[in-house]
Image (cartoon, rainbow, N blue to C red; front, side, top):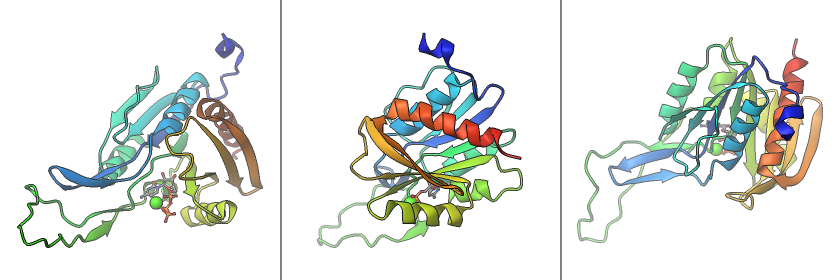
Length: 223
Ligand code: CTP
Ligand code: CA
């Protein structure tokens, strides 16, 4: 009912999102991952669809239903997420990176389960840095309007501004973690070239609608 009166601010636009954690395998039964429920990304995908956009959602391993009308592609690792993202990129107007991408993956994935050898010795793990999906997309000549997320445990504004410049994206959405992880509500700080604007604590679904509105306004104002 409410939907009926909401202007379709993203009508005719295409929105691509990443959401959830990534899972980086160590062997067939173990891996490393990040803490992320995927709730914010899924709420944003739903809000973007309701705003009239054609939405593609690239999701790491999460336990969430696909929002109605949204095209979803499931992936595991950061490398897979990058590959699927780049394949889906042509024709997109907006890219929203909400995924909690694992910054590192095990340098090699063992073909078989790593076994204890009985000596009490622990495996020596080596890591490789994962590709930065958001920075890779933002650096492309055909880059859509890019939105990054930043979960920080301190100095929220300072870290968010630095991240915005480092990744060369117009908008960073910052929140204080890990207190917000898995919760149904959050408070967000929008950091763009104009400065910072706070979206006060609210349900993630409400914040998603507000955020999609903010993104649509910035997209419309783009030269
Ligand atoms: N991101 C990404 N690919 C990565 C790492 C991060 O696309 N390999 C995206 C996230 O989806 C988020 C933004 O970049 O939108 C910021 O992620 P964050 O982890 O906060 O930044 P990092 O650059 O990884 O810095 P750090 O973890 O050291 O704070
Ligand atoms: Ca990171």
